[in-house]
Length: 389
Image 1 (cartoon, one colour):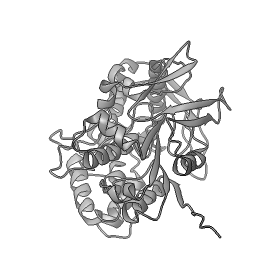
Image 2 (spheres, rainbow, N blue to C red; image 1 turned 180 degrees about the vertical axis):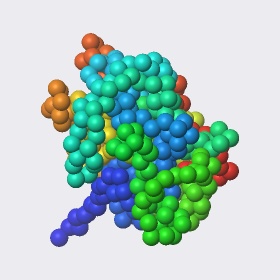
Image 3 (cartoon, one colour; image 1 turned 120 degrees about the horizontal axis):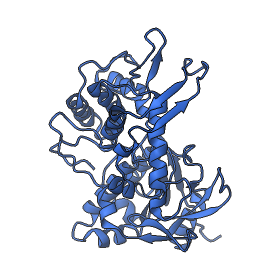
């Protein structure tokens, strides 16, 4: 009986995406192909950065009502939606949004949200009516700019414009009739259990915590978990030599793991493995076996409720199998709109570093090279002496 090759594939998203990269980096010849969605790279940075929104609010001494934050997100989506050449309620070019949209233009716009009863997960909240304030916009801008220490040096990256401000959500105090800080449990639990090594999952406040504190916590846990939870080893030569293929995707409007985190790792692999090639040629070489796709309007490992007309990939495993077993590399990634006005429609997602631009009366998407837009995805983490892969 003739030998028949058995192929092995990995598929996972979020922590499952990070686990996939751990497999690729450690067991290079065990997998023929892997699908890694929105991976939780740099776990020390990733978990602690959830606290940055709270620090921004505390620094400004302003705790915006959730309805004000929702208004800022919705106005951002409305303003940046057409920048990709198609008005469909989806921000497919968050990079152009960074370049051309000023959050201050939202100041003074009215918002209104009805009262909500208590549920299993949240207390009752009153009706919220008002106008977007300068401080509310300052909170949004501070979050979007990413984590910085008190000297203004970049500590970590942030969410793309159009992502919801999940980490900045405040809680209502019925006794004082005011909105108050709600500390991120993601960050509190990680710092308590993995940095301070104490049995605690939540904090009442973050008194005294600054960008410097976040930087120092990141550095300490980075050092502790470099060989386990960070999962950013950029030299994938053994996996590539073994013939492995990677299909990596990330929702561009992810509000839990910033999409720029995936761009950072892809760029690190390019620089380490193809140091003698320029950006374009290095990406061409890398794309022979490792391809990254940013999904327009998508949230964390799923479509976004605030951008329901956005597509989401549904045939990744089929695409990967065709690539590995038949040599059919995906020039674009097939995706389907799963909800909203365009439910059931198919779209093609551009291969990084190309960016989508609709033409032909919004009927055809073209994948263009735009260096100015690409540059908005790249950060200089000057708060650290070590390279951040």
